[in-house]
Length: 364
Image (cartoon, rainbow, N blue to C red; front, side, top):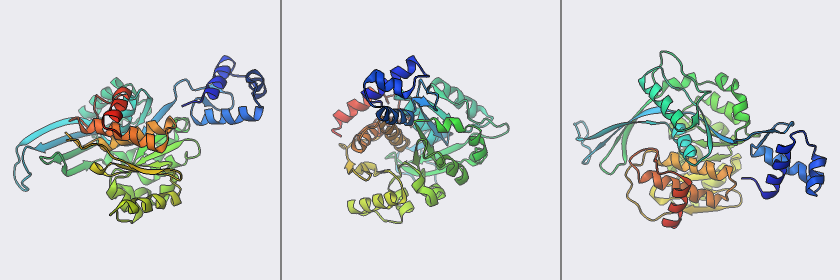
């Protein structure tokens, strides 16, 4: 989000993209050195590209990672292993990176998505869905003779996950080389959100843009999180859940002091912002100047799938709008709550209006 002074400077540049810093300083009656600092900040926020003051009319968030078909079943009663359990099965479009950017688009932010979809019915349907959500997928991959990634989950009668199987070999095709050919989209993004469905080498390439933009990581799972353990400090912001945070840090969480220890572990590695999802216990947040935990009133979730992705989307929105860490955590928690109260992994109720309404109603 631009300051009032930055808005004034951007207005002058829009009127004359070739204007010098001295001319801007004279027009606004401030020093040239101040103008240089403000312009640098405007460039970091994605409103200006390069030295020629090329205006980026619509700053965007770029999501890179998984998109898959979600086949979800839930049992009407406690699950009986090795038996047929009466219940209901649904098919939807999911994937961590996809769900994150889907939520971000619903917040009114210009959204780009680099993923890989198979040459099958599900891939075509998801492509059309993403386009309908105003998500730019023009730089994604659509290889021939490949099946779209599929995620099969089974929920118990409490809507908690009992087991899941992920068939995601197609993501091995989304390589570093593919992203290198799309480097400008990474460089000019206000923020990049990624997940660990990608190969380690691809994730390492994404972090090479850490001095150009803010890179936000959702670790996805304890096993996949191990891909980035050696360069976790290259990410601006991370959002593990409790068990992922334990796996990445080697610290068992038994109390709030342990959360602080884990926060300090990541800060020492170079991470700037840490958010740890604690399920029904809320969200722990920490950076060098802020620390706390956001808890809400108890709710009865209809579906836990997608709640963590919604949390990450809210974090990304807070970061690009320069919210405080606490306000970012509140915004993210509200987005997650809206999703928990919906049977879909991405709720149609996600909007700025509903998020702020939830913050008030849940007393976050």
